Image (cartoon, rainbow, N blue to C red; front, side, top):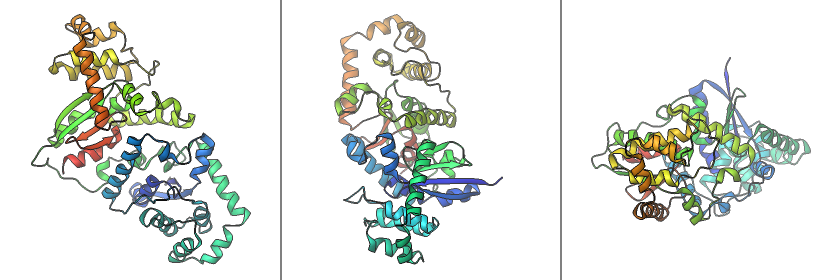
Length: 403
């Protein structure tokens, strides 16, 4: 049976815009029928109690990083992107017009280009008219039709259906009515192909001058587990000097005003989605994963044990500890479990976790993370200046390390 690729979107999301620039190529790669699914993002946010002005609700470091992140993806895709001064702008008229035109790709790309390339208000009649006319439609007729109850009800019903499917944001991909995949950065999972087949080729050799790659992490984060386990291979492929930066993530959150357990503040559909997404990401990385029965976990003693160990033993201990918590559901705050993970000399190492100098080392490491602009884990920092957040940004990190 031929594949069917659905793409749920609203014009007000920059990441949906980025996804829209690649979705047709993605469908061709998959040999899939592409179905555009316009919905009202504000309707999803209302259904889940999400702030309508999401950027303003984020901590400053995260909001700033997201702007940089969008620019990096846009540069990689070779498309224009600038944040309009009046973002978020009203999109309901443009979405209705999209439905009236039968989800014409020329209309969709035209509205996205107007919003994210030109910063124009796509709710204004002259902008609506210019986009529709350029796409070959009778703008006056389309604009008359968008005011009819049938079209208004259609957009409302599509949004309600998206809520029922568990959508909490855009863009969302769905293949053959399978599970939803949220975010334009999930294209490899959508296609079942590696990033290498979806993006322009990168330099096969490391750059002449090796970069430094710092990785900030805490055992308490599942994404840090996924990032830590691929960091060494990434550094070796690119010739980068790898520097591990353990930190106490909860202390970082407290300092910057982030909820101590962000997962618990999300709407239920988003929480459920992320657990599934962690599992998919682990499978893609060839790693075992099981969401632990003890969450959140107090990781202070495990982090101090890492710092108390001789440097040559730290990596094996970190790998074992990450797996113990995120694959085997073991209590890494328990001395008996830590003794098993440490191995030789465990008693002395555990005793050192109470030493003032070890406590200070962890406190200093956490302060360093905050000073570097860290707001989550894992965080990658190249040459002490370029910050990338998330294990799923490894593809961007690798490209930067090769430049």
